[in-house]
Image 1 (cartoon, helix red, strand yellow):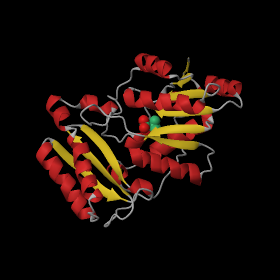
Image 2: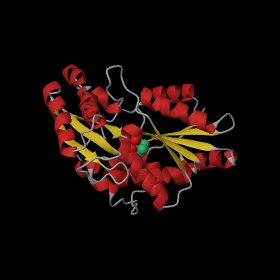
Image 3: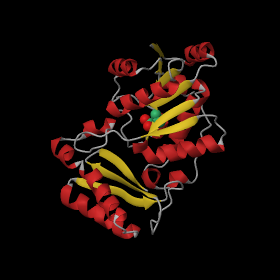
Length: 282
Ligand code: PAF
């Protein structure tokens, strides 16, 4: 497996690879089993003759001024070992100066799906995500790209970007990988102290409570939200709900009634850590 840190080398690699199928896994590093699963899925999609590329880049553009850009974990050596074991062929791990010119003045702006859920509490976040993913798509020119479904909104927005900007990339949303107690894997779980970690699986239980009610015929979004809220209140008193929403699974706009399908999504602060999770109702 190759590790490249500059764009010229990545372009050389891309030229050499030519017509072989390229599958991209964009990450910010600090890889956990969820990421390893993404790389393994990418390996399968690439097949024996294809190539799997992993980008590892903590993208400053998607962090707010008060967010954790500075303390976000950076551990290239152990990340590289995990990528290699999972079947990656190349890692692109550039420094910030390689990706962004100091006088850069163009971004990719998403104006609808990014106004709700995480976008409402993290203004500019998804513009940062779209901008860096657009650049990665331009550099890797992948045939396929894989993203985790835990970041459902991110996947929906990138889908929209691929459609609206005519990227010829096939996107794959991969199921969330969970700890044995149900907590969705996230590089931010390490910010939790022992008590918070103990309470954090309540996110999934809250979503499941709503899902169960919906499966049993409850269609009122207000009722579904209330049921989920009760679980957080009783099982995760250290948690502070940032949002708990029932939305359309494509437009992400809030629903008042959930008929045939929808998404219930939650974000909860535990101290400085902000955890997200979701369940698709279908
Ligand atoms: O999901 C992530 O890790 C990031 O948002 C991504 C897609 C790598 C863009 O920086």
